[in-house]
Figure 1: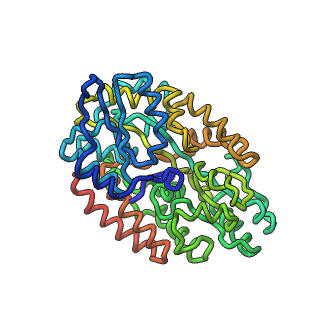
Figure 2: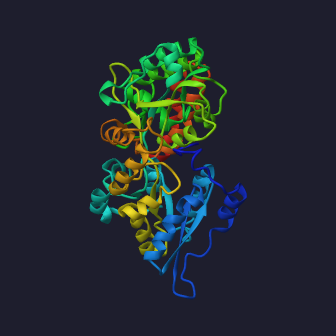
Figure 3: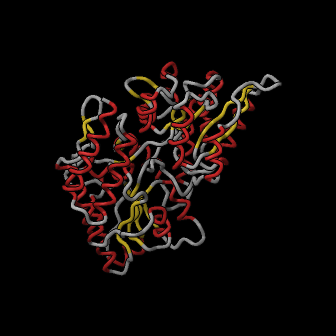
Length: 433
């Protein structure tokens, strides 16, 4: 189960043994030490170095609060939270809250209601990130990052194939049909691969396909607990997805964390991924001269680009909610705090002022390829982004559909596979009714 957006750039550095220790023994007291200083524990699943600047900046402004970072590998985060918060453990104060998980966390009673901060969030943060952190009209986490996806292309491979590259303008966005046609030409001209996805088979990236084909996110109804993955849009998009691999435009048997590596090595004509992949394209071993274009869509369909990233929530069981709220407010509402969250990574912050700084940084990160990329991202987040559905059953939905995507990629019949997934989701969602 993967809901992470930038695995290879923010790989966790602790061992599974440390995560097990955190699971069994907790992460220490969340009380007040002998000097009267409040200690709050922040549980997260990215490299601890990513937040050292954030903690240092916050503690400088709040000398009576100490923040301890508790790192857990991503694939163990849900298990650790369930084991700890499921028993109303008071030693977790601040936690990662993926927008897609917020409804489930709310249903379990884990998150403090932060709706008193809604006006501040609306003023400080990008509107799409506030929406993503809101459930049933209540704000349950404060936005930290957002995300976007782009179409990267290999200039040399397209030139060799006689293909004019796609423009950066959203008004001239390519369709998936155009991408595949160009990818096949590039392969005929010598490219090893035609099209790679940064997150093959994962709902975060795949959702945009049925959305663009008119199939929606896969759940409907007022409570978003009615599966809807057998409609014409889902069948069309998954039939296209299967054919992409059957025709060897995209490769089977290649690990998803190798996709940006292969593109950086000059092996593929196209790559769909986020801005965090740019780091891989900048290194000295990279053999790719690349350009960037907007995320594609199906001809005659809806423009749809994946988005969302981590927000931070406050545990409802924390004994130091005031201090915890100050920490997440510093992260989300201040330019300084928000910029500290991107000290180690080229991922867009949710804070508007920090985002303006990020845009400049992004444009200058790898010119000429990245010239104008910041403004493209801003426009895409405003007009093209599709949020993952706020269903309490998202975790089960992701597990079922990720398996379906994998089966279809490996040759399974889309209609049969989606019908099976529909039944599995209906059964899984019963616990929420």
